[in-house]
Image (cartoon, rainbow, N blue to C red; front, side, top):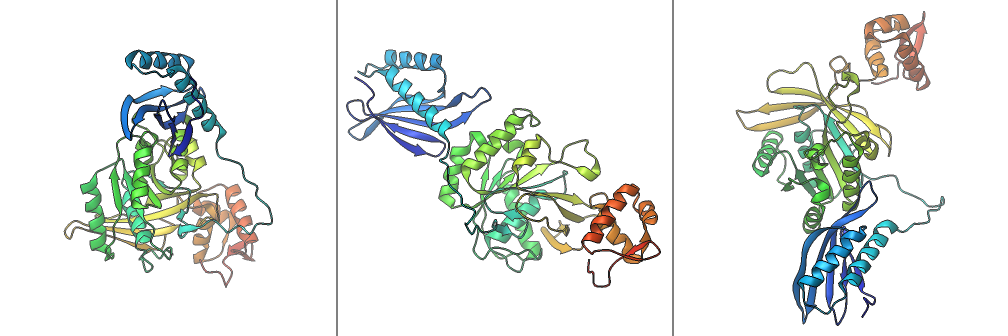
Length: 421
């Protein structure tokens, strides 16, 4: 007797394979992934369906679908354990062959014509969250990254059109699911309630899930929650633990590749909280971990805290560092007030103080700020900004091309009369 032609039914991150009579077997393959050795691994579960009743024959077991040794051993063990008239070697071999074939075949190709009127990438939140891709906000500890992310989630969930951040939101509500590797449900609820008190946010609900396993190992359960809630936006807090930082080194490529693969399978917009790499120059902070985290994200912001913070008030600035889908937006200034007496948090938009964030802004922006008080020569700008003459000359050249600065005479540079900064 041979395996015949079993039916293969795609499932999220796996397949269901069904053999008809007389075997009546059901094999469920899940948790599929490929490693550096190009071998396909996952979980294999086998049941027998008799008169509508399924009997478990093989409990969900970690399985190497590419290993001949594994296939032979399991076929022998199952045959010895179960007194059934089934050619287990044929069943296991066919299952492994088909799974590998499907995994390596990938998605089908498509034909894209240059005549198509393709729309611009859609934004869920003005410049900060692009739909369907990885969006990252990174920064040092204590700069209110999570708090800001929760607020942005509420802005798109409502949607909150007159939000105090002045951000354009979608016309329809975007269901949001927070995946939290950092804290727990009570702490999340505490921060959300404080934001509501401080900002007068209308009543809304964010879905929340406390996570412990890396995203790639928890993907089937998370997909079920996405289907049940209808979530379109995932807030991932934070990147290190979600990518498996507790079990391995984030600087290697494997964690980043697996994390990206898992997000692509989920097919949802993500807003990811990340940390900064230690030892980086203050002017050029980067995301902690492998550079692949940066390469795979389509939209990246750095959240920075100003030097002029007093007590419960933080002056923050959100700097647009990378964007593959459109032009970067200007820095966004934020004022965050934490009032423990009233149990509230209030975040408002404010102008970015170039002087306070001088180490984070471009030389061009610093030049524009400097000449607000009057025209300056290149030498004066070099001394005032404490940067190289070459950096000043390059920035002046770009500003002249964009008509943001003009020669006022005497080799002094100033603002055009019609320029608004």
